Length: 131
Ligand SMILES: [Zn+2]
Ligand SMILES: [Zn+2]
Image (cartoon, rainbow, N blue to C red):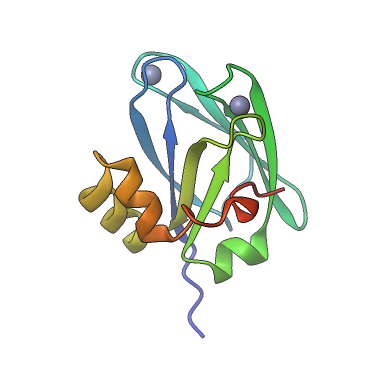
């Protein structure tokens, strides 16, 4: 099995509404990383512990910050992960293996509904929020 540590995260900026796409390498997280939008808003803080990647995301839906603990295992095993606002259910970020994220962004960046259908989360609300 080839472990591909190349991941990307796409997050919708809570300030200007644009998607920001950043690389992150889960084996190379030594300090906390901040993803800053072009509009100067800090939209994601990426932290980590022994087993989890911890994402603190500025939510476009409700203006709060949400904290998501994502298992490293999930990032390794799943091609795509999605996080949603726990209050509104709106998807605010997705991340995963670089080729998949690139593919999604190219095809679906302007069409969230098709994106969600493509990933298969539209029908299944219970799985939309990762905790
Ligand atoms: Zn912005
Ligand atoms: Zn929210």
